[in-house]
Amino acid sequence: MLDRHLYRITEAMRLLSMSRSVIYEQIRAGRLLSVKQGRARLIPAQAITAYVQLLINETEGVNGQAA
Image (tube, rainbow, N blue to C red; front, side, top):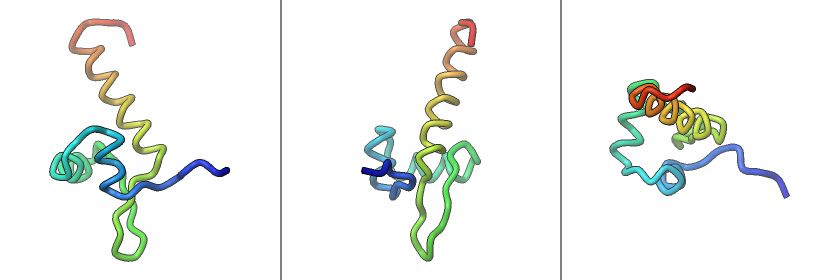
């Protein structure tokens, strides 16, 4: 079985526990990468992983913990 490489916005919403508006806000801000296939906006699995790591790094920076 192959791993998924692309997720629809609704799937990314569930994976990241975020609302649709927050997902699109993060895309517009350049913090969450997305791609288009035809009319569909898709989130690469690598982008979800990178976004989670970005959040972790930001939290560690705020808390003064080593990265």
